[in-house]
Image (cartoon, rainbow, N blue to C red; front, top):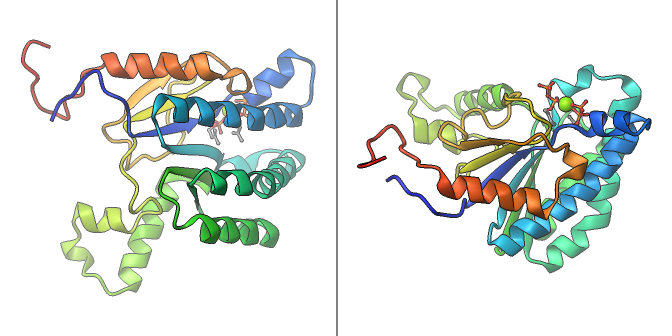
Length: 236
Ligand code: IPE
Ligand code: IPE
Ligand code: MG
């Protein structure tokens, strides 16, 4: 059960610090978000080179709607632009794209781009990129229970595999490693069910500055961790 020296199969990333990165440079927060998109490309290729082919990126939380309207609009526009620009290449590289979160509040355009990207890449097996947009772990659990209730499952007999199968992430392995940039030591409602036994790695690096060396540092620390899953590991 316990393992060391290994590579995570699935990494979740809480991409935080875009605003601080911009403020340090006297730029608007939107410039930080644009720089954050560039960092995504770096992180994806570094992960791929290291042999990690399953990534989940936290892009917008259910709580992020409380930000100024202008900032929310900028982020949504960036998601639309990025999806449109990147899908071809991701598809060529055999990456399956999925978006998790409550879709109803997204623009019709973004919903269409997401549905197209998911449909086009559904058969890809080389990598999995999941982007959490209007995602909240609590909302996800509520949505899962609602959908089970709606499909007639006996909730009094609910068990963990059944609930898991109704989460947005059904079919994805649980994340082994959660990376958070910009220093905050909290999950901010990201994959709260799935990350129950994930290793947490927090770096002070702000997301737009996160590069291949930062990813390798996270992987090195992960490899040195002892995962016990509640059990006992002799000698450790
Ligand atoms: C992360 O950067 C991006 C999103 C949450 C959308 P922030 O915008 O939270 O940056 P800080 O935390 O203000 O520096
Ligand atoms: C978490 O960052 C959400 C995303 C990275 C999308 P926040 O900046 O929203 O988190 P808090 O507010 O510091 O907890
Ligand atoms: Mg933040």
